[in-house]
Length: 95
Image (tube, rainbow, N blue to C red; front, side):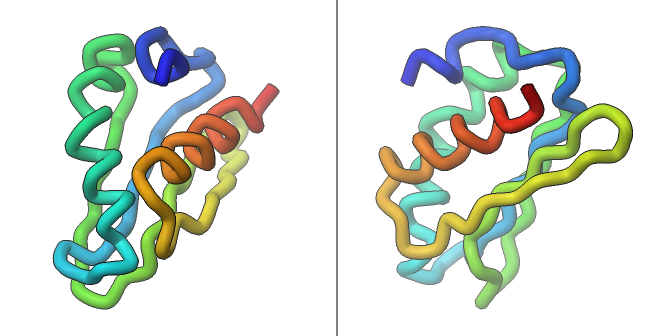
C-alpha cells in the first residue's frame, strides 16, 4: 500500500490500465483502480494515468519509461491486493 503514497521515479512517463468494465476476471483491477487512482494522482499530478475499459479486454497494466521502454503485467483474475503487488513490481522495473 505504501508504494502508492509517494512519488514514482521520474523515469516513469505513463501508466495505462486496460480491463473489462463488467467482466468478473477484471474485478480485482477495477477495485484497485477505484481504491488507488486518487492516491496515485495526488502524489504524481503530472503523470498520465490512463484507464481503458472495453468489454472482453483482458486486465493488464502498462508502464512507459524514458527512452521509449514499455513493460506490462497481466492482471486477469487477480484480487485487488495481488493487482497492487503486480503493479508495484511493474513500476519499479525501470531501475
